Image 1 (cartoon, rainbow, N blue to C red):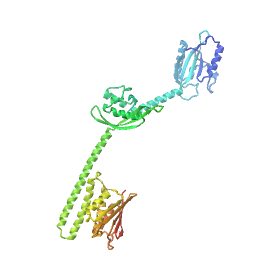
Image 2 (tube, rainbow, N blue to C red):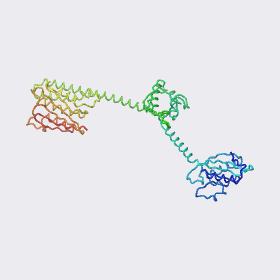
Image 3 (tube, rainbow, N blue to C red):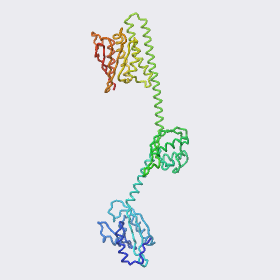
Length: 464
């Protein structure tokens, strides 16, 4: 609306206008309506002087691209007498601000007492901060849009009524293919989900609306009948008053991973079956060899030869025991030390009056360690049965173990017996001692005779 100046003296009006204009922060100009030269400006930066500006064309102070736009705008105001706004994006030289600036130009006519257009009133309001804020928001929205849509995951949000408020292109494309719908805002997310799962989903949504975060792996069938697996996370959306107003939903297709896991499990199961069969057959083959040696042993007349066959048969049986235990276990490649020593002792024991006492750590041996360890312990136990426990009542074999810094220490003790002075424990001329030292070398360990009466041994085996 034009400023009504009728009935006011020009002198009084001009003085009052000048005082009012100088009190506001916006740039205020009075322009000649014929050529748009500046008659008055309320304030200028220090680098400009009023006398340099007065009498110059206002269009000189906007960028060249906007000069014609501003001139056309002022021409229209002068001819129509109406008040209008124009947004200019330029580098206004009336401002000390560097870089791009934005202004809202509000133009109106000022009439004299006779109703004739006396001047054009032009007010330039700097909206750079507001405009830059809008641009920053727009840029962030564009980045967010790119993030949401440059992914293969489903991303969406719902309000407290389960209605869709936001969704990305992946979800939109899926719904369009499955349901033929394009505009989804305001529709219920439950419309696109299996009705059988609605009650469970509502319970889940209720927890999230109460502030909880939920992660779920679910499956559903596609229109083509394929089963698809998704890993979905649900997060509450808070407003500025920290009230939950909605739920953000991120769903990732993990079908390939699930099917891969299932295939791997099946492969592992087949491997376990194969390993079990291998250990079972090895055990049976060793048992067959042991039986053949036993038949040969029964027909032997030479006592020394018969004893040699008996020792060999027992060693084979101790080896078969490892495979039998592996076959019985679920892992097929691990043996617990106490369980193995207990069964080994029972297989070799010659009298119910001889007992075994196990204490301390109970480590697990893999196959590479179990076989040499078992055969070494076989030789030690056989020596105890042959030399320490003859004609003794209620005797006990004690084994205690500790595991520290990856080293297994076993203390092996007969409760009776004497290790012969004439025998050098480190001399491997005898078969039994040779086998003991051979097997401990295979374990990268050591064995030491620490007492001869009764015989006691200290064994150390690295487990790392």
